[in-house]
Length: 296
Image 1 (cartoon, rainbow, N blue to C red):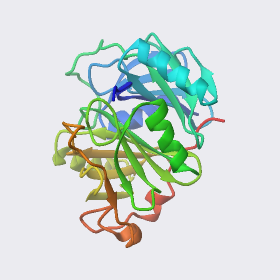
Image 2: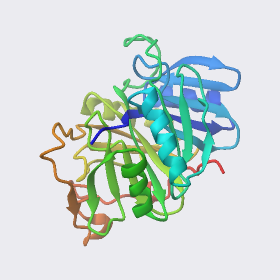
Image 3: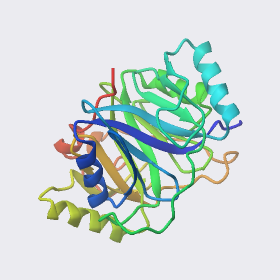
C-alpha cells in the first residue's frame, strides 16, 4: 500500500473572536501566534508556520487539514473523491504557506483539506505561549452517522490504514505514513468535530495545562487516563467554542505495517470499559457533550 497522507496538518476554526480564541490556546497549551492577517490568527507549536488557524465568523469548524506526501498525492485524492461522487468544496488552499489543496466533504459531513506540506518557517524554540509547548498537532476525532462509510473514505480515498476498531465498528482509528496509531479517529453520532489533539513531551506538561486551566477558573472535562486504542495518556478540556482539546503523551507507534494487525476492542462494558480508559474512570458528561459542528 502507498500512503497519500503523511500526518495531521492543521485545524481551521471560525470564531466570533479569533484573537481571544488564539490567546486562550496559547495560554493553556503553549502554542505561539505566528502571524495575524486581517481577521485570521495563525498558531504553531513547532517549525511549521501554523497548525491551528482562527478566522472571524460564527463558531464552526471550517476544515481539518491532512498533510499529503506530495502534490501528486493531493491530485490523486481529488481524483478519487470525484470518482466516488463526493462533494469538493474547493481545489485552492484555505490559508497561507502551502501551495496545493483540495477540500472535501467526507461521508457523514466532516470537512477535510488535503494539502501539500505547510512551510517550515518558524524556529523550534520560541518566547511566548504560556503553556508547556507541545511537539505537534497529533490527531482529530469526528463523528459520523455511518462510520462504515467514513472508514471506507479513509481507506479508499485517503489510503490510510486501520489501526483499531471497536467490536461493533462504531469507533475506528486510522493512521497515516508517520506511523502514529491514529491521525483520524471516528465515532458514531451527529456530524461534528469532537476533539483535536496535541502530542506533548511528558506528564508534567499535562499537569501544567491543568494548572493553567485552574488559573483561568476553568477545569478539565476528563482525565488523566490511558486509552486502550492508541495507549496514550490523555487529558481533555473544552475550548471557548465547546470543542474538546486533547493533550496526550505516549501515543503508540506502528513501525511495520506488514506485521501489525488491527485490534477489535470488546465494548461490552460500555463507556466504563477498559477499552476506553485503561485506568478505569469513565468519560464525564462534559466530555460527552463537547464538540463543534462543521460549517454547512
